[in-house]
Amino acid sequence: MSESTQQAASAGQAAGPGQAARPQLIRAMNEQLLLSHIRQLGVCSRADLARLSGLSKPTVSLALANVERSGLVRTAGQRTGVPGRSAVLYEIRPDAGYALGLDIGHEYLRGAIADLTGEIRAKAEARSPSGSVSRRVGELIKLADGICAAAGIGRADVTQTVLGSPGVYDPSRDAIALTGGLAGWDKRAVLERLRAAFGPNFAVENDTDAAALAEREHGHGREFASFAFVSIGSGIGMGLVLGGQLHRGAHGVAGEIAFLPITDGLGVVGTPGGPGEDEVRRRGTLEAVGAASAIVRSARHAGMRATSARQVFAAAAGGDERAAAIVATEARLVAKAICSIVTVIDPGLVVLGGGIGQAPGFAAAVGAELAEISPVLPEIRVSALGTSAVVDGCLASAADLAWSRLTAQLAQPDVQADVIQAVGAF
Image 1 (cartoon, rainbow, N blue to C red):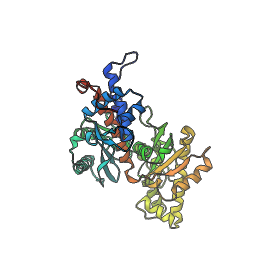
Image 2 (cartoon, rainbow, N blue to C red):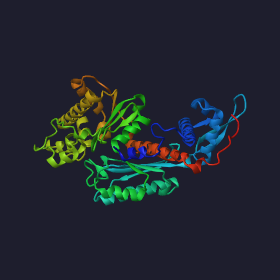
Image 3 (tube, one colour):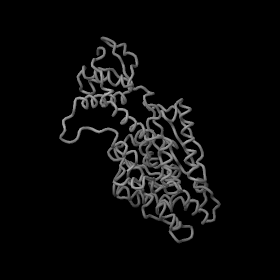
């Protein structure tokens, strides 16, 4: 389970089973319904909202009066050029809340801030510092402060912050677990310091799950109800969307395919060119033999002077037989992992992301290998979202959490008080 899942579960409480809904709760539900329509449509009139929601015109007017008073909605002019009276238009007030998305990667720190309408106000990136975990946390906070300053707000003005990170949130330890190659990131002090900096409205999302959310909102996932996002780069992971919803599993480790016990010629434990037992335990078998560092290790074992997986792929494209053999083995390894996914989930689409997954020609090579072993073939596409995918997914998650928190406040007595008259005509 991600920490954001736990926050969402407690954002607002409805009446329990068998309990009659109070009028105050009914009003809040009506207001949340109208807000969701306004958020989806962008700009709409009261007549639009009555038609879409099925609520009566007086009910819509009363609900709009309250949400406008709460500061979540504002008027956006009038609709003209149509028969009859001009209609007042409503839209979400952009500065009613802000979502901050951050990405802690092996090589880069990235982040962006968006207002309540989803418009990005500022973004930035920086090289991920080497050295201590404390320094990495400090640089992430510094990056966030710079983004907020560029957007003209302070860190305290952010409604919700979501960090995309390798691993999963472990509530029993109150720390991030399974952090793979991000050494020291599983210490409890990491979350303690981040919470101290960003406050209680801070959540952690698995980075590949966040990328899958971005794919669902902005990429190939918009065309499919269920799909798998498989990232192969400095690490290996999967984000799984089923029926339009991110699937995390009972313990939050759904998609941790790094731990699939799959090897294929890129070195096994205890053999020349293979990973050590400690690395396998820490990162998982598949990641230990198939991530970027493993490709570099295999290339050096083959006599190449590569310092990055990108160099190995470039050498393969240039005709180097040693590099070509390594790339072919990597494609077969990834195809085996996807075959495992297909036989359990049977997604209609598999999106490849990460530096290796997005390498030119790699998806075609994986598809050819998959055709030899899989009972069915899902569509395989390369993600077009680029390096901002994790941040975009964190923004989507942060926006949903911010909405849950802001709309839950509508049920509070101080917000409901004194809203006793409908406003204007349809």
